[in-house]
Image (cartoon, rainbow, N blue to C red):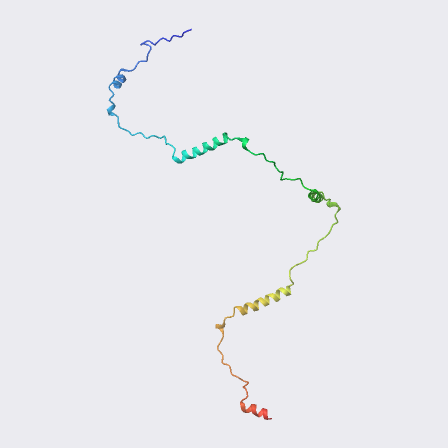
Length: 169
């Protein structure tokens, strides 16, 4: 079954206005401005090409890997089960925790606590204040407040004559 398409007749085609048709026919392309076009497609750099090649070679190596060249190995289990001592210690620890968690407080006896005063007595505090006051007086002493004094000797030493007289006597 052949399908035939009839060409549209001239009266069925859309009509173009005469003034638009005359403008299109009279169009002068020399009226257009010259414009430089910038290509926005950037070529990859040499580094990008090199990294892509190394990735491709890695993937090719993985795809073409021959697993028949591998040697057979035995695996050793490094996580052994705990021995009797570890199990016993763990049970003892668990029993202690259970005893603490399920402790019955109603079996305990009532006690009263005496609070003792850890502060020193008032006499000791007063004695320490006096000692600190005395030490501050010594440490903060200002020698510029002293008056000048002259000393006179009231107990003179004996002369040589007096000493000789005492020896002979």
